[in-house]
Length: 374
Image (cartoon, rainbow, N blue to C red; front, side):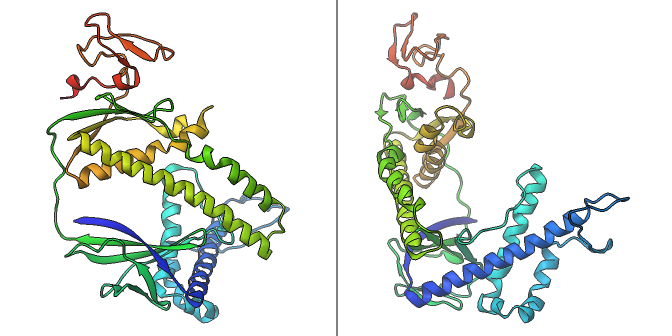
């Protein structure tokens, strides 16, 4: 099964935007109410068997079942009679909100930490329309249940044969997007190893260094706009919360964050396509960037977005028929890529100089011995 996610910009009018915001707010209330039921049930099972708490006590019958996903979904029709506001939201959108909560609950039970949290005002920024009988995108408009036809910028057409399965409406700053989930019943094999191989090393000194000697300077997306962002955030801190001026300034801050994110992602896609233009096989180090992001250089690591770049490179390689793989990073910079001899050097040594064959290169370009990979 072949699946794609295409993201388009939509332009709802004032009434449609108010309707979307109302749907998000109702879904947020349903999410918090369902989470409250789960927390109350858990707290009622925590008290001691021979004494009660002096602060509060959750009185729930001992035979009461856990508010599972199925039970809460079955209670939605009854809840609509008690809370008429729920009728303004498509039923499947409400169901997806409850399912989203229980996915977070199951994830918490698997890991043992990360209990689901209540969503504050404005924290629910997307809703999912999970099913469509026909293609909702026609004539430069997208049709959504109980919202109507919204103008959409289809900057790239939907491939022939693909069906629209789901549509997620996303709000970023004051802009609206839809993420369209496309599906086609066909199996596409992964590209096999072939052609010219390129080893890629990612770091702070050089954002990108390849085995072919290509070096790319690290662009400082966040640092270049940090001064302006700091000024906007300082103005926001002086506004009265929930006032009109506060909301206007908050949108300005959100726009700046959105601009930084878009600039970084655009750069990652351009570099991924440049790698595919230069070779047929791309190899990267298998590193956990979450660990290095917690260190002294955490801001620089997060500004580079190395994990996102690796994911984007893998996707671009698959679409363009290039082979992509990750390799073990241990000792990759200690092996000479020309003769394969182990040349030990400290991190302070930034130039590789092999005493056996005389090969000399930048340490970043010496991260892979491609002879051992092929």
